[in-house]
Image (tube, rainbow, N blue to C red):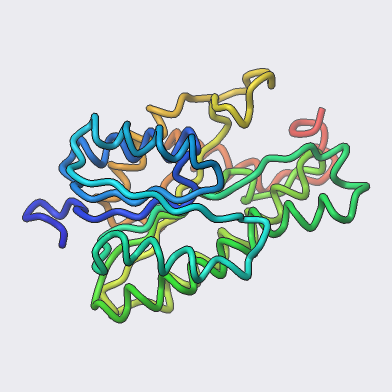
Length: 255
C-alpha cells in the first residue's frame, strides 16, 4: 500500500533495464518504495537495475524476463511481476520501447512489425492485464513512458512515432475509462533524452538527461496531471509545433 505521504511502496517496472526507467526507479526507492520488480529482456541488465534499487533504499527486489517482440507473453509477464511483488501493486511503470532505425526499418516488413510489437502491441496487452489487476485490488497507478514524438509524428521517425502516438492516445482514453475506480493512468512525454538508445545522435533543442526526466516524473506522479511533459516547457512548444503547416513542419522537424 502507498505510505501516509501517498508514495508507492510496491512497484512493478516493465522495461526496467532502460536508462529512464532505472533513473525513475532509483528516485522511487529513495522516496521509500520498498519492493521493486524489474522486468525486461536482458537478465544481466535487470540484475544491475535490481542492485541499483537496493542501493537506493529498496528492501526487496525481484526480476522477470520477457520478450516484448512477442505480445502473446505480455499477460503472463505482468501476472508473474504482480505475484513477485506480493500481489498488491501501487505503481506500474511501463517503459518498454525501441527507437529502431527508420531508414532501414521502413523497407523491412519484419522490422516494422517488431517496432509495432515492442512500442505498441506488447504494452497494450500488458496495460490491459495491469488495468484488470489494479481495478480488482481497488486502486493503484500506472505511469506510461510515451514521447513528444507522439504528439505529431515526424517522417524521419514515423514507425516509432506512430506506435507511441497510438499508445499515448490509448492511455489517455484508458485514464478516462478508469474514473471512479481508484486507478489512475498518467503519460510521461519526454523530449530527446541522452540514453543508450540515443547514443551517437546529436543533441537537439531541449535535450535532457535521465535524472532530469526522473525528477519531472516524480513531481508529476504527485500531481493530478494526465500528461507529464519533460522538460515542462515542451508542453507550450508543442502547442505551436503541432499546428504548423505541413511544409513548415517538415522543414523544421525533418531537416
